[in-house]
Structure formats: structure tokens, C-alpha cells
Image 1 (cartoon, rainbow, N blue to C red):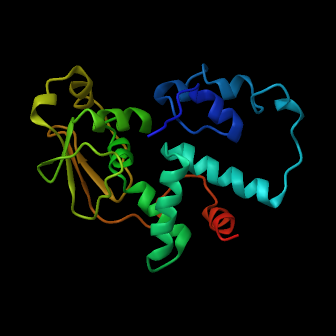
Image 2: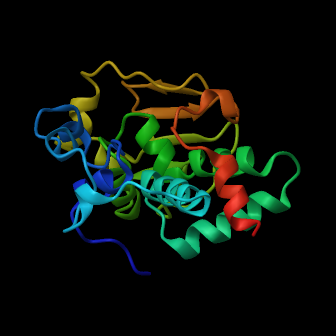
Length: 206
């Protein structure tokens, strides 16, 4: 499947806010958005006007880039969210949050969602004791995500044992065992991603 291979900081500049795609760099003075707070490209500093459609498109692009999905993946997930009972926008964000790669990131096992996706793909985790190497795997309440035994000695995961990790209230983590559990499915109020999901719904409803 195609994936974006260009500069991550360019995406943040295009959306006009930090998407936290590069881990610790995003919190430092090296962040490109702090230095150049305008869209990339030759005409970046001249772009000012925007239509309703343009605003809706930007929200969709922002959500895609926050979670690292391509257009086909995102549209497919939206279709599933629309088919579920409840509010489509809320369903969409909950499904994005409970992807395995995002949960690994939320548990503090990776500095960014991009790194989390790579770690999952390389087979460093198990879900409920079973091999799990598909980043898009949907988790549910009660699922346990753990670093597999062969990876416990990795310097990457040894560092985590010495860290204090802040997790969302719907997740618990044991840094000594290097495993976390989904205590419940997140609600919209518990998701801090700055996305206006109703605008995404309006976009796809046209």
C-alpha cells in the first residue's frame, strides 16, 4: 500500500498545527512549525481565503495525518463508522483511537504513531497473548497489549521501565511488565485529538 515518504514537518505546516509526527522533536525548539508558521510551498504565505469545502477538506486531511492513514484506508474506516449505531463522527474517532498502532502510542511504548506503526509491523507486540503485527487491528475493552518476550531486552523497551508515562483514563499500563490494558472503549470526551469530526461527516455526505 502507498504511504507518505516526504518530510513529516511539512504536513504540520500545511495543517497549521502540530500533529506530533516526530516524537520529541515536536516538543523542542527544532520544530519546523515554530520557525515557519505558514503553509509550505511557493505561495504558502499568500494563502488566506478558504471556503466551507476547503475547511472540511482540511479537517479530513488533518485527521488522516494525525493517525497516519492514506485516503482509501480513511474512507473505508469512515464507511464502517457510518454503518455503526450512534453518532458517525464519534464512531470514527473511537475507531481511530482503538487501532493497535494508536493504542501502542497512547500506552507510551512509542514516541510517535509512526514509530508505533513500525514497531507493530516488526512484530514486537502481542494482543491477548497472540501475535499482532497489523497496525490497523481494532482493539476492544479488556484487550491486553504486551511487548513480546524476545523484545523485552531491547534498549528501546528497557528505557520505558524507567519512565513515568501518562495515559488516557481508558488505558492502564504496567511499565515493569511492559503491558497495557484497554479498561473501556474511549468516549468522545476522552479523545483529545483536535479534529472537528462533524466537518468530516459533512464532507463525505456530499
